[in-house]
Image 1 (tube, helix red, strand yellow):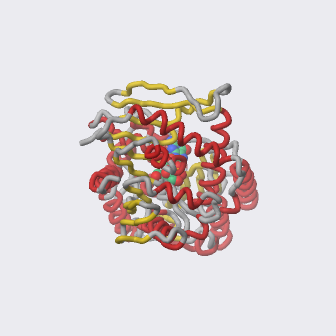
Image 2 (cartoon, protein in one colour):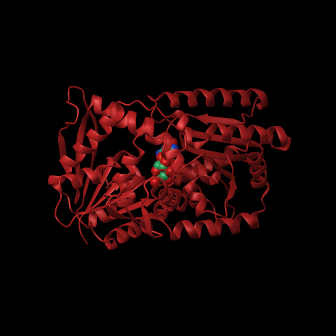
Image 3 (cartoon, protein in one colour):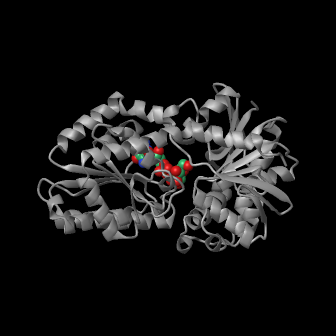
Length: 460
Ligand code: GDG
C-alpha cells in the first residue's frame, strides 16, 4: 500500500483516539503506511508576511505531522473570510449570510499556494494524497501547477448546493474547475453528487461519461458519494466506560419522573437549533401532558465566535430558551436546559443513552455524526427514538429514523410527540435496523471505500 498523505486545515495527533473525528478515521492507514499529515499549525504569526509560514515537523509514533503557521492577514482572509464567511454559508444554502468581500479570495488562493509549496518537497513519488474539505478545494490544482503527479483525492465534508446556489459565489467556475485537478472527488450524499453533476453539465458544459465520471476543462474526474461513518466500536466502548455509565446513572436518577430529549451540536446556524427549540415549545403548547415532564437538554458547544452570524444565533437561542422557561417552567422543573459549553466526549454517550428522543434537526448538514452516535449509545432493549432532519446527509442512510422538515415547526412538534409515544417494540425494530446500517457503513468502511476508489481511478 502506498504511503497515505492527509491534508486538512487542522491536524490532530492520531494517537489520541479521544480526539474523535478525522483522527480516529485515518489513524489506522496513517499508522500502517507510516503516513504524513499536513495542515495549518493553528498558530498565527503576528509579524508573518502573507503567503509565508514556518514549517514544523514532528513525529507522532509512525506518523509525521507537518504544519505551517499563517500570517494574521492570511488567517483573516483565508480562514475567517473565504472559508467560513463565503464557502461555509453558501455551501449550506445560506447565501444570505455570506460576506462576499472581494479581498478574501486572494488570501484563500495564497494559503492554498503556500500549502502546495510546503507540501510538495515532502512528497514521495508513489504517495497517495487525500485532501479534506472546503478550505482546500484548489490545492490539487496548485500542486499540479508545481509538477505534482501523485494520485490526489478530495473529500467534501459539507454539502454541495444546487448549481444556482453555488453560482452565487463569484469564483464558482474557478472552484469547480479546480476539482478537475483531483483524480477522485468524494461527497457525503447522492444529493450532493447530483448537484455536482448538474453544475458541470449546466454551467460548465462538461459531459458525464457515466454516472461517476465527468469530462471537462481538459481532464476527467471521478466523483462519488462516500457517506462518512463513525467508529462504532470506539463509541460503543465509550458508552460502557465508567464516565458514561456514571453520567447515565446520575441523569437517569435525576430524570426518573421525566422524559429527556437531547440535542448536541456545535453552535452553528446550519444546525437548526432555534427551529428545534420552537418545535419543542409547540409540543408543550399543543400537548399539555408533556408539561412538568418533557425536558430538552440542548448542548451547543462554542464555535467560531468571532464571526457575526454566530453571535446572532447565540443571542436568539438565549432569549428563546429564557422565554420558554419563563412561560412553562415551575419551581422544580425547567423545560429547557441550554448549555453553551463543550461537554467531555466521554460523558456524551451517557447523556444520549438516558434520552428518550434524540433531536438532530439541522437545516442543512453534510452528514451529521451526532445522529449516528445517538443510535450507537442506545440500550437495544429500550432504545430512544432518533428524530432526524431530512436535510442532513445522514437521512439518506437512516431511513428508520423519524424524518422531519425542520422548517415545519408544527410537523416537527407532531413528530416529537409521536417519538415520545412510540411503543417499545417499534423503537426496538427501528433501532436494530439503524444500528445495523451504521455498523455496516462505519468510518473504516468509508476510509477503505474512498482509498480503494482512489487507487482504482486512472491517474492524471
Ligand atoms: C462536519 C460537517 C459532517 C458536538 N458537541 C460536542 C461534541 N460534539 C461532537 C459530536 C460529533 C462532532 O462533534 C460533530 O460532528 P457533526 O457531524 O455533527 O458536525 P460538524 O462538526 O459540523 O462536522 C458534518 C462532519 O464534518 C464529518 O464529515 O458529518 O456534516 O458539518 O462527533 O459528538 N463533542 C464533545 N463535546 C461537545 O459539547 N466532546
